[in-house]
Length: 222
Image (cartoon, rainbow, N blue to C red; front, side, top):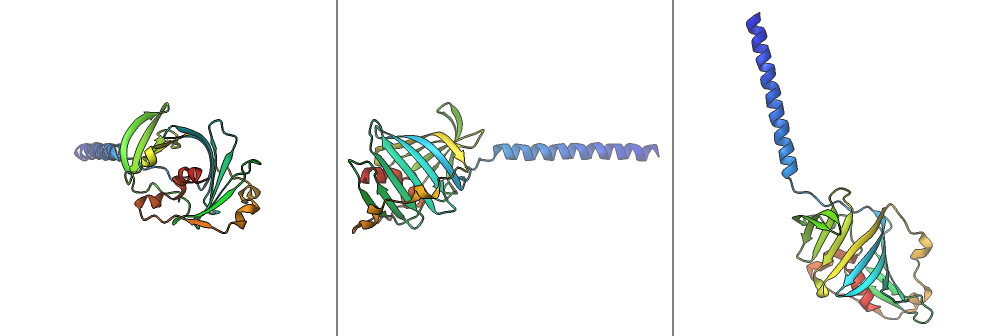
């Protein structure tokens, strides 16, 4: 009986050691795995400051994936004229101003719609970096964008485009679930009097990013 009890005790100890080893291995494997960027919320509001080759802009971004729409409200530094870039998932954008002394609208059609929430799928992980006083995980995709995400909160902190001399967005606020009321999504009536629609025909891989880069294009176009 004593022999059996001793054997049972040894087996129990071995089982515990085996369990601990397995748990340690799983923990080590998890900690060594590369992080995956968070999928964007389907609806959010972000206030951003942009630097486009030295031109500073304030951008209010309203993202509304379930309703197939995205809104960039763009204002250059010390400029009273606000540019409204209203984008729809069918690729149509209304780029307009409401300022009494500078009121106009352009209708632009892009080959892709608004950016999907998982646009960073298959991005390449670059490691961690301190950016804007936040420790961030960093990814890049198609040698076109670098994206910085806060390690703790997983909120976007910054992104950078290589194109057009460089275009950097610093995220100041990020309100998950915030929705702009429907009346604000209506383009002014003079947008629908346009006889010309600008067609953007691009065959580059940059199309995959949809409207993430369209703010920069549209601000210049307006």
